[in-house]
Length: 124
Image (cartoon, rainbow, N blue to C red; front, top):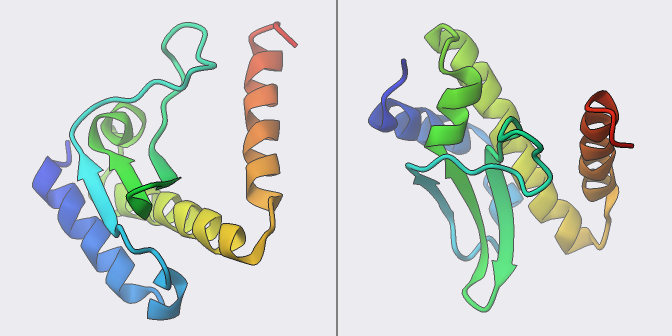
């Protein structure tokens, strides 16, 4: 299993490899929290939030949940975990840039994913 520190190092490496312009106005930066975060739509605590783009009075920032990442990807080899982590970071950075551009495409995509989850569970 990937440790918290290893995950943090991977996130730093991935973030540093992306163009700096993607982070414009991300004034709260990025952080990795230790907890598991279950999605509010989860039916049996089986749907996890891996990362979130947040906007509030503190600014704009991205939070990653180490506990959730390990619940979902902890069984993977390190190189595959890294690839998945890169997708999560890219997803959250895209949320930020779409917000700045006034676009909701990824928000709509995320809602479709939740609806698909609910359909699989027989609730939609």
